[in-house]
Each structure stands twice: as structure tokens, then as C-alpha cells.
Amino acid sequence: MNDTQVIDLFSPDYAQARRKFMQAAQARGLSVDSHMLPLPGAQGEVLATDVVLDGPADASRMLIVISGVHGVEGFCGSAIQTGMLRMGGAVLPSDTSVLYVHAVNPYGFSHLRRATQENIDLNRNFVDFTKPLPINSGYGEIHDSLLPTQWPPLPDNEARIAEYRERHGVRGLQRAISLGQHSHADGLHYGGLEPAWSNKTFRSILRRYATQVRQLASIDIHTGLGPYGVGERIFASMDEDPAVLASGRRWWGELTSVTTGTSTSIPLTGPIQCALTDECPQARHVGICLEYGTYPMERVSAAMRAEHWLHRHGSGDTAQATGIQQEMKDAFYPDEPDWKHTVWQQGSQVCLQALRGLQEDAALPSLAT
Image 1 (cartoon, rainbow, N blue to C red):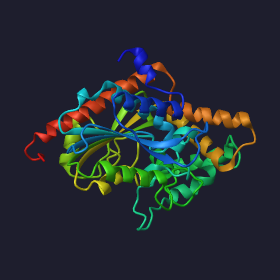
Image 2 (cartoon, one colour; image 1 turned 180 degrees about the horizontal axis):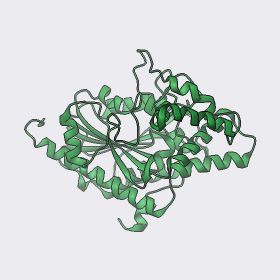
Image 3 (tube, one colour; image 1 turned 30 degrees about the horizontal axis):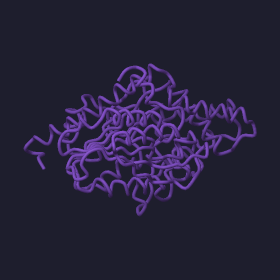
Image 4 (cartoon, rainbow, N blue to C red; image 1 turned 60 degrees about the vertical axis):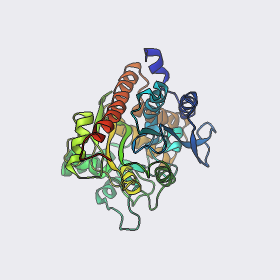
């Protein structure tokens, strides 16, 4: 793709992103399976998780490309999905399909939130709700300091967070904030008390399209952590078989891990990859989260706190509310040509590597289906 074509993959809002994705599918003669969310978008537009299957429905090998788990992060993933569709089906190996799941959290994508309409962080919602829910006592200690009644926060409020960091370290503070919590429904990274609409919808999509798959690859696209424009490849398979990790490294090269502490992320309660394990037990799953850095963590964290503060308390100051929403978008979607080009270059590369990897592993005697 030339420079103009790459920039055109990206959109300024959810409505345009959805339209480009659907047009790319339709230009290829591919049908779009739309799961409608019965709520209006920020501009009154229809909200939906849209699914496109590229390749044979009975393929034994499948790559799933996921965007918008954290709504506002969907600008990036949507562009990669649209670009892959525009590239055409010639890249597909035999007996292989690609399943594009566009805007898993359409409400957050449209309304510039990471959370869903239920204020749920989806990557903390894929837990077994029949069992006792995970406990994150650290979050309870700092909830009111993270989202105080007044914004910007007062110095003594920030001092309480700094004191927690002094006692538990930078990683300890990150864990308390980001691990996931089920105790404060109006808080950050809330995991919910039941499966969210997006959780149930994603599981139904897997049951419809992926029950016959024997070899499964997944790429879950996110933004907000790490150096500007760098797509960190975080190993994201629940299978602890060393051979699965070996396949991931063979396909994609160096991978980081939340369990060993080599990733900018930390272990999460209930990530979306749990659904792949639950709904596709017949498949060998090799997956990554592709996490693109945007701006320094201080800026990203402040934007996320401010947006959650606005959701929790509201603001009578229209200019303040608009500014908070714009900063939230900017923090997770840098509207800059250099960032967009590197996003596409790495994203398309990772997708093509996964397709080659599925084909190569199929030729290994120990993995042949």
C-alpha cells in the first residue's frame, strides 16, 4: 500500500471505521454478520460487533483478528482489519480462514471509553462467574484517590497514591490499579458480576464460526502501553504447553510474557483469551496481544483516570468534559501519520506471519490434523 492508502485505513470515529470495514468486506464479496447492540452511538449511529469470515467455513486452521476489546483502542485494530481485507484473499493458504471480529466493545469505541456500557473492562470479565470472584484488595485502598470528587485532583489526593507506590513499588501500584476488580462498579477496570453483552456476543461468534477448527491463531489488538508506535507482541495463550509458546516464537519472533514480568502489561483477571479456550477446546491455540505504545504512561494513565472521573461524577463544565474526552481519544489513538504507518506495517506483518505459521505447523508430523 502507498502512503495515502495506509492513512485511509484509519478513521476519525467509530461510524466511519465501521463503514470502511464493511465496505472492504463487501468489495471482496464477503458477507458481514452484524450483532447489534440496542443502544445509540455517540452520533446516534447503529452500534454493532461486526464479523467477517474470509476463507472456507469448514477450514481446519483459522486466524482470528480482534479489535475494540477496549473500545477507544479500536481505531488501531479496525484499521489493520480493514487493510487486511483490502489486501485480498490471495494471501490465504489452503484450508485456512481468517475471522475478523470488529469492535467487540462498540459502545466504548463510539463513546471514546475503554469500558463497555456496563462500565466493564472486558479483559477482566471473562471469568467463571459460578466460582468466587477474584479479589483485588489493593484497588479498594486507592479507589477514591484515583477518582476523587474534584478534578483535577488535589495535591493531597495524589500524595495518597504516591504513598501507596512507595509501599508497594511501581509494579505494585500498577497491579492494584490494573489487575481487575469486582468490588467497585463505578471504578477503573471493573470486571462485573456477570458476563457483559460483549462477552456473550463474542462467545456466540466463536460457537458459530470456530467449533471445527483444529489449529487456531489469534491477534488481539490494543493500544496505550509501551514506546510510541512499537507493537509489543505479548504471548496470550492460556495453554501452558511449552510447545505452544515455541510455535508463537517461531511465528512471530520475540514474545513478552505477563507471567514472567517481561511485558509492559501485568497478568489480568479474565482476559478475552479465556473465551477462546472455553469455546474452542478442540483447537490448539497460539495467540498474542499486539499492544501498541502511544504516549508516556503518565499521560495515558491521567487520561484514563479523568475519563473515568467524568463517568463517575459528571461535569457541569462542557469545555472540561469535551477536553477530557478528546484527551482520552488522543492518548489511545495518536492521529499522526508516522504512528499510523508503523501500526499498519507491524499489524499486517503479524497477521501474515500467523498465516504462514499455521501452514508451517500443519506440516509438522506432531501437529498434523
